[in-house]
Length: 318
Image 1 (tube, rainbow, N blue to C red):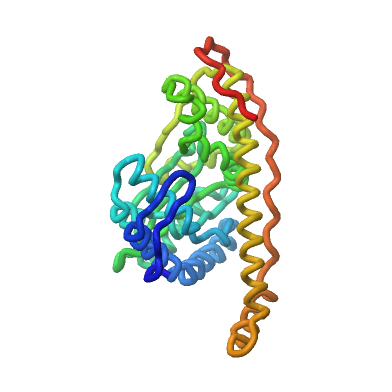
Image 2 (image 1 turned 180 degrees about the vertical axis):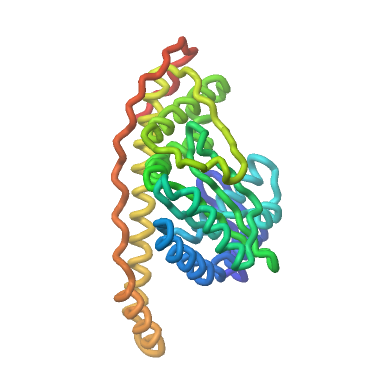
């Protein structure tokens, strides 16, 4: 793929052919390692399932989408002047995994996972514990093999914490992207208030998530966000933006699934020498699990923000 890579454009960002070649080549390395890493994490999960109830979540997403990686690299170039070579070298989450444990077995389950990964030759290079953070709760780790540059991200959540994280996906996207700056139209104070509104909404979904006993033994304790008073109209605006973002993401997922279906159907209708390949694809499709249904819109959390006088209601959404 990388030998034929041209330029790339998407969501207001772009990569030159050479930049895209660097990014795509790094992604291909992660794609080549995927099956092996999947198998290793499945083995770890099976052992921890017996001893601590571990569950591997979202394995179908264990490889970051190549266009998501391209956008990340292009955004780093445009917004932070970071060369794509540096992004390709430092990226940790092209291969990424999530393990969940019930709260009462969480800490011991995470510690046992550490032991198993070290037995496989991996060491943690980053350990961020945000269980005390109001906006995102869990432990995010990065692992690298001691004999190579092979690395992956592994998140540890409880089932309820993982559910809250997934429901907050659109809010996370909004608060970390240019969406809020565009809403605020250059007003930095207004942009801060909008981000704080997104933080309040994310925090609300974590209200009933139990903090695992003993989790403070794991990694570096971080509190990255602080909840501050926010006008009710700003909360409502971000709530509307969340609903729009969810609809947009679902439309993209459906379009991608349809494009994949059409490509597979076209392969199945090939004649001549391609018949054997087509038969292999038929066998693969017959064995593949059914496509995941689109996510339903989670109930928007209802919060009672602390009122304050705002300079602007912000632009209205249509």
